[in-house]
Amino acid sequence: MQRLLMLVVLSSGWLTACTGGETPSSSSPVSSAEWTKIGETETYTYYADHGGIRKADETVTMSDLFDYKVVQTEGGIPALSKITVREYDCQNRKSQPVKTTWYADHMGSGAAGRSSGAKGQLATSASGTATAALMTIACGR
Image (cartoon, rainbow, N blue to C red; front, side, top):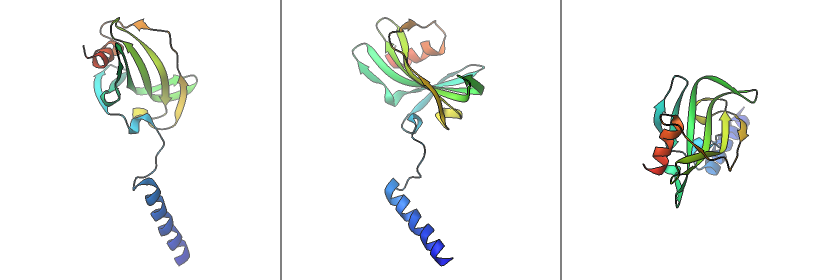
């Protein structure tokens, strides 16, 4: 019994030393994101990662998170949230999703389900939509 207890104590110390005192968790964009609530609909609440905004001339990249109120099914997999890295053409007021990942739980947590991505599909966002609001944040206007 004492050997088992000593093994548990030593394992905990080793784990703490290797993780810098943090409990290991699944690697997720959520852990480094600075999510700010932007708006809410009947179906979801949406957030932007202000700290992750990257600008290159008139092109801006920013991540957004949609947190759904009820389970969504994406590619046959149930999900409660999705994180999208989106590219914005601020000059022409267009955007495109670069990569979207669906998550089993709220706020981009839990198992990552389906991921998809595409480029070359810049589209204008209709006024009053979540994407239009996110573009305003990303482009600063």
